[in-house]
Length: 398
Image 1: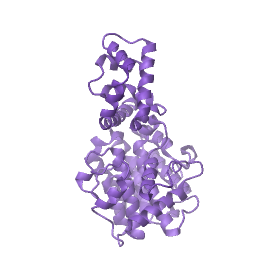
Image 2: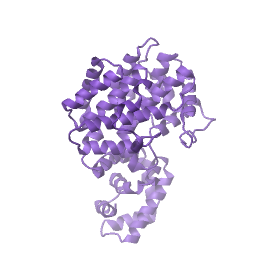
Image 3: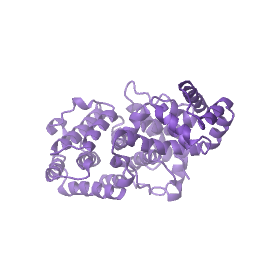
Image 4: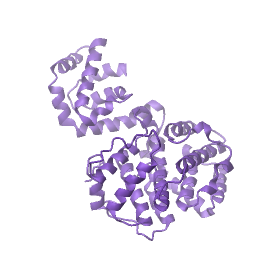
């Protein structure tokens, strides 16, 4: 199995890659394959570029990371060659060129490490929106959908040797503008629409949502984007906004056909965009956190619970050992089975749990801003070490 959260996974990816894009792959066919995987929609459901055994047990984040790599490599393959080493060098150079001033996702990369490991670090940072775990969970799906902009910018870099000035800013402004324009077509706004706007605000990197003209499509300069993958992506993003409430009105469908014409795409492209997302959602709706949304707290805890349980399972032995070596903590946990801990004892328990998290690298997530809110979840999933009454005590403070 390939573990996209462990060092060396990119080398395994290239060694076990099952399907590649031939050099003569048409841009439309490349884009359709990427779209069918779910990468365009921010949720990867299909990873058929690898054997099923290689992807077993992947988290949604690991799947999107591998899909980003596969899409970048696919773009390189149809533009230049299938040379994995040359691609890795080019991808690192691209991200160095792409990083806007003040954006530090490349600062953690160690120059002395193998190039494939450097790229792993870059991709790992690229799929994180910020250091606030709460915001990251809220903006997870939309931010992932915006990752295809990396692939489009990489294409520009391969063709021109650099990313055209303000290209990413123009692309992001256009994506946001079209999504907001699509939302404005709706006769009734829903909780999903409000959430989508909040997700955009949390996810954009190069512009501000408030500065985008949502009612003026002409101001977006759609003619600037000439390649078919760019235009199809813009159409699909608008379609995602329209279908954010699970249904589309006639005016919304007409908007998509009008937009397709303005993007110099035919009616078939509009029909494919509508049908593609409709089929994808019907197949995978129950697995996509965004469409299981009921309220922000539930959305956050549902997603966070999955991540915490995975971390506990992967670090179970180390965590049990650290807990067993802390006599004071175990004594307090024992007391909690018989009585409610006072405020001072609860603070001491939390402080010592955070100290333990510092010794287990994978658990440093609990040290990030907002991470302390996950401590009740940490307690909940520690295998049969803590009494249930302690969970209740901590839940009261969360």
